[in-house]
Amino acid sequence: MIELNATFFAQILNFLILVAILRAVAYKPVVRMLKEREDKIAESIQKADADAAAAEATLNEYKNQLKDAHAKAQEIVDKAEKRAREEHEASIQATKQEIEQMRKAAQEEIQRDRERAVEQLKDEFGALAMAAAGKIIAKNMDAKENEAIIGEFIDQLDSKKIGDLSC
Amino acid sequence: MSEGIIHRGFTQVGGFTFNAETLTMTWLAMAIVILIGFLATRNLKLVPSGWQNVVEMIVTWLHGQIDAMMGKRGRMLAPLIVTLFMFLLVSNLLGLIPTLASPTNDLNTTLGLALMIVVMVHVLGLYFKGGHYIAHFFQPFAPFVIINAIEEIAKPITLAFRLFGNILAGEILIIVLLKLMPVWMPIPSVVWLMFSIFISCVHAVIFTMLSMAYLANALKEEEE
Image (tube, rainbow over all chains, first blue to last red; front, side, top):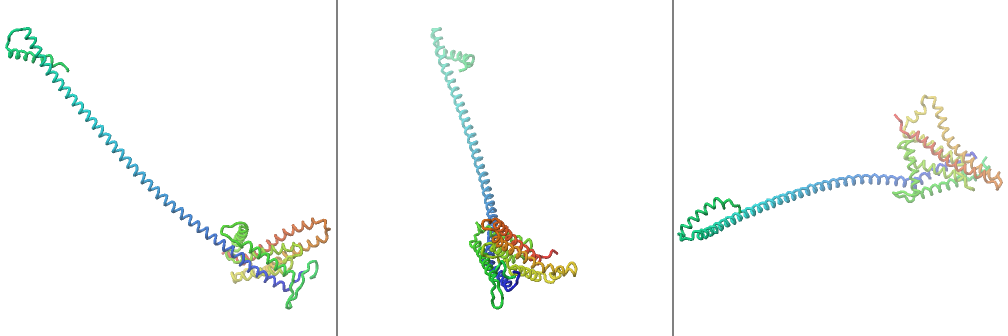
């Protein structure tokens, strides 16, 4: 049983052959595959990093654009508000002016009416006084003299009585 | 004592004697190992699945062990070590199948492998470290060369006889138990068979790990 012979060398040779075969058939492909995967993972990580950086840059760009857009929109709104306010002011001003004008016109008209009424009243008053005087005196008096007397009378009346009348 | 319980069938080829059974079983074991290696790595994909995970795990683990024990130089020995382990495991288990025998139940096989490893250790040690390697046998002082020499001689002998003894004993006891026990009492045989499976695995691991340790001695960079 414990006996060494040429099998000894045959076994060493057998084993070395086995190592060579297994190395070629099984070990090399596995190692190559592991290396390939390692490379691929490294590459993927690198790519992912690059992608993340690019995405970050794009995001920043968009943010800036959005900020600009906001600022611009705010500006536009401000401008529109300002213009609206100005228009509003202007329209109020115009309305006020119009009212003022209307008020003035009305006052003038009232003044005119009043003057006209005073004038009319004066005339009527004159005619009335004359008729009254004619009836009372019932005499032939010079018409011109009469008119002068009446005019004087009315003028006095005018300043003393009618002038203070508020029409 | 060449014909006992174990029959080897001697063959004469050109004046050399070969153990026909051992050689046949070795070739069978080699065929199985190559088949396993081929099947396990036949369809490698970048995204692993199934057996590929196991194969990758083994290779990665082995690389880790080698890097830790031997440094980067050890990587070139990885195929040798993985082959050694697979061959020993298959060889040891082969003997447990009835009518088959382990190639490792023959001292020619175990001593052949052990001597090959030890010769490799010295050759690689001389190649990588040169005179420094020879000098380390004379440390801490010259007379230690005797103790170191005994140790170096003991390495292949213990390596070879440990494996040979365990496997041969296992096989002999399987045969003996089958002959001793009546047919209706299979329990001792089954128990021993289970134990033999365990022993086969353990000794494949031990032989491989010790080989790695010896090789590491020769390859490791000096911590200077």
